[in-house]
Length: 230
Image 1 (cartoon, one colour):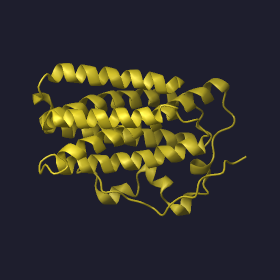
Image 2 (tube, rainbow, N blue to C red):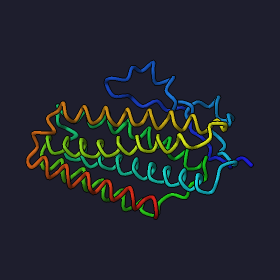
Image 3 (cartoon, one colour):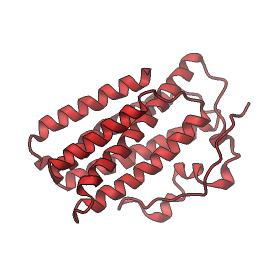
Image 4 (cartoon, rainbow, N blue to C red):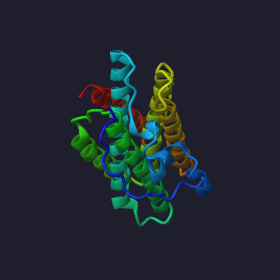
């Protein structure tokens, strides 16, 4: 039985980071979730039924974490913008990265409904913690804000890489699985682009860069494990 999906809004195409041509956006895997002409396709409207309990649990844990991670990322950038939004150097960069994360979250919300995943109960915690992390590091300076982005995106890039390996074990017969792999691969590349942007904007010049990176990175890893289970 197909799940009942929420009514989808009109296609929304946020502005993109500098290395992604606008024309390419329309052919990216995630575009399937914004194209109203494709909403009846099995790949975007159904979840596989012929998988084992263990595979289903793995899929649900992955999407639960991804949704929570994108919520936190949105609030990190929101916190940074409150402090640095008017900065002529990093303000526009943070705004662009946030817009891309907004797109990520919209897709993850659709995937959560499509695959009938129970969201984490830590959603509000992710919002508060994300905003606090973004605002505090921004108050420490532009370099510290970029160091926060570098640390977060390093962990998320590695996390998406690990997920892609796990998803290779899922059967490809159902069209939602190949699409899911492609979407995760797309988002991984986006996050690694954010990492590059942070490094190019002097993240490694931040005071106590090594300590800040270690603390933020460790916090992200703990949050990932908690969201898998809760």
